[in-house]
Each structure stands twice: as structure tokens, then as C-alpha cells.
Image 1 (spheres, rainbow, N blue to C red):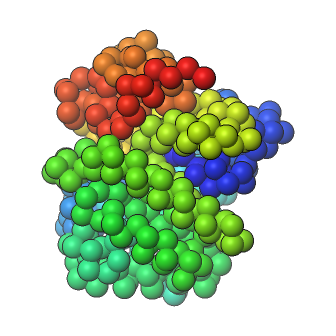
Image 2 (cartoon, rainbow, N blue to C red; image 1 turned 90 degrees about the horizontal axis):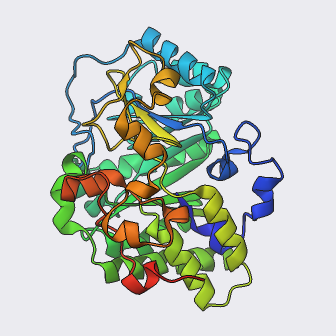
Length: 395
């Protein structure tokens, strides 16, 4: 994640993370990405079932029952494993996690076990009553996916009325006092609606948004032709920065992030250098603390059947299963060459990534995207939009 508002607008300084000695056990949630002893934030895909049918779904979910999903007792055992391993955050995802009736119970247990619990949802099932339950168990955050305004979103979601139901869910969360944010996946079919998404943030007083770059996984593989050109990505990132600055200049402290393309980190820093920003050097320190993509290190995924993956997009490769071994044992087993490589990947990178001088703040970006295009997990990330001059620029 690249915190546009944190970095460009100066809502976080490098000294903020240093104050806590960059220890994940001590850092507040908004500084966790700068920890030096990263334990993984774990995405648990609690179910594959979903009431929508999104065109870019990484898990190929549909509205039907799937076999092999972990039950409540197994979920409790997983949470115990994550707590024992000192994971800071569990993100309940899916499919649609709120189709699980035991989700509030599992979230409450995670919180009591010392984990920060958040949910990634399509928002359509969050009634006023459910929002109250989620608030009562102590849920920290609800991220709701919207990929455009009304008809655009509904086309992405495959269900008419999904936008209005999601917006109602967002309002119910806010009324209950739960922090809520938007999740938006950028592609050719919707990027022109980003200004309207910013308008929606302001109209609804939504405090956070994450703009995701497209990942070629699941049904998202079918959208490769809808990937933006390098020039379109650059213009879009500039738009996101500019709209964020505009909000903050008017006293609206919305948290804005981009996700799944650490070329954004380099692009942001180089823009600040061109603008002669006095904060550029501090931002570079923060980006080095962040360390770039952390699949297989600072983020992991447990599937609905207990399989452990490097991240939520890498479903085709499993390091083991929590039904048979503890998450901590699986995560620290470097006998698996992929796990070992992901934890120390810089010398393995090829192509443009090998030539790049910004590995300390990008870390080779998304390996699953390289694999999808080149059938080589160590090839260059095809979504990097930096020029040859930029990747060789020493400052």
C-alpha cells in the first residue's frame, strides 16, 4: 500500500514510526506498514460463496455453496495460530464473508485474542442491525468495494442494484460508528469515474479509500485487455494525488492509498523531487521503511479450505494447510523455494526489475502478475509504468 495522503500531504512523518522503535507490537495500525519486524497481515478468505458475480473476482466466486470450507471451530483454531505467531491484523474476506453467520463471533474472538479485525466486503448485506453487531464486537474497519458509480459498479458486480445496497451498507456502518472505506479497482472500464468517486467520498464523509491496480488473477485474468496504458496510469496517479491534495487543503483529512503497484512509490517520490518538495527526503525514508511489495513476508492468505498462500491473488500455489500444520510453522519454513525467494527476492528478479535502482522501495512489485504474463515468478512486473530513464535514475 502507498499512502498518498500520508506521504504527499504529510500526515505521517518518519519520526512517527521511529517513536515506537518500528516494532509491530507497539505500532498503531496506521503505521504498521513501516515496521521493521513485519509479521504478516493475514487475509482469511472465510468462504468462496458470494452473492455477487464480479468480473474481476480473484477467487472465481459465485452464489452457490462450496465444499471443504473451514467451520467455526477450525476458524477459532486458525485465529489461535495467528495470535500465537503475533500477526497484527486478520482481514476477513471471501467470497463475501458476511454470508457466514458466524462472522461476528469469529471477529470478536480475534479481537479478544489480540488481533485487529477488519472486513473486506461488497457491502450489500450490511443492514442496520448487522452494523450494530459488528460495532459491538469491536470491529476496527470495514472496506467496501465499489468500482464505479451506480450502473458502472453494477456491471462490474453482475447484479443490478448492488451500488445502492452497498451505499446503504456504508451508511449503516457510519451510523453505527464503524470506520469504513472504499475499495476501487482501476481499469479502462471505470478509471474515468475516479473524479465522481472522490465526489462521493466528500458527499458521504467517507474517511478512507484504496485504489487498487488490476491484478491478473481469477476472473481478473480476463481483464488484461482492459489494463491502462502507462500514460493513462501516470495520469490517473496524478489525478489521485491532486484530488487528495485538494481535499486536505480544505481540511478534509481523507486517507487515500494506492495498492498493488509499488511503482506508485517511485512515481510519487520523483514527482516530489521535481516539485522540490522539502518533504521528499523524509518520504524516501518512509518508503524504504515500507520496503515495497511484501507477498510471502508482510502479507499472507489463508483460503477457505485452510491452504496458505503468499497473498490473496496467488491461489494456485500453496505452502501448506493450517488443518495439518500451524500457520507460523508454514510461514517460516524456508525449505519451500518460493517462500524462501519471496522473503529475499531482490537478486532473483529479472528484466526491467533487475535493472531498476528502486528495489529497496518497490521490491519487484507483484510476482503473481509477472507469472501470469511470462510464466516466470521472477520476471519483471508487466504493470510497471516507469520509464527506463526513471528506473536508472540515481538521486
